[in-house]
Image (tube, rainbow, N blue to C red; front, side):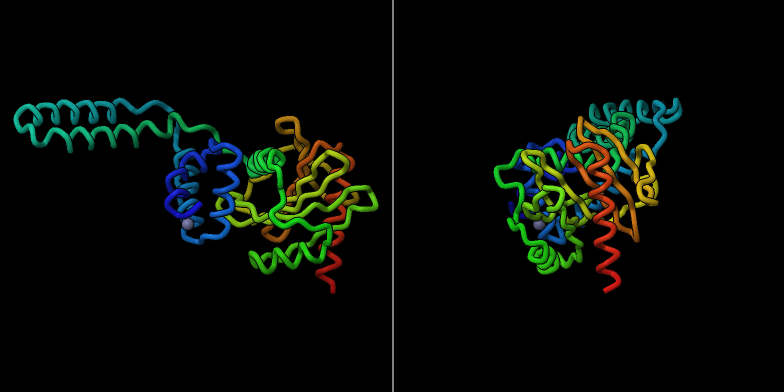
Length: 260
Ligand SMILES: [Zn+2]
């Protein structure tokens, strides 16, 4: 995917309406192209702004103004046919701007986005861009590829095998995606920049003295937490206890690396 093809599908991409392979192609391009990444971030911010608008129908005063403009422009069109097109276009644009907030869907939390990515990646023949069971190699790949310093925990004692890694686009920012598997069950670990408060929606659970937010989304279990401006999210069909244990080990690993 290049910039042109990316921008052509940017809107459905932001809305999560692209198919699996297009989403992955767009993710990959956004991860590599700062320009498209910033365009996407702006688009997301814009939508966020629209979502935060009041959802009532257009107030009577506004409706009256729109109707007046439509009447005026059709009258103008009758008098000056060459004005008809731009005037009609202006009214259409005004209506679109007015009506958009009413039809926008509610904001999706970051965890919902991670679950969608987990599902999308799981359908790929090669979910990992970089295939390696070597934790150090995966860590080095993130650093070299995206400048991300990521702790890659060892879950092999629990029979969870490291498969590889990928750079994902989460909320228009580059995120690390680490893929594990236990038998045929995938475990996705996302490490993404936190985009603000209220990101994590779900049940608060304390495990080994740490607080996590857990949630079931589309049949997948998720465990997430934020730490130092970074959001960590685990997505899998594994049970809660296994996920919490994996989360705890990831925290351990990070703490250990920070100490070194
Ligand atoms: Zn681009």
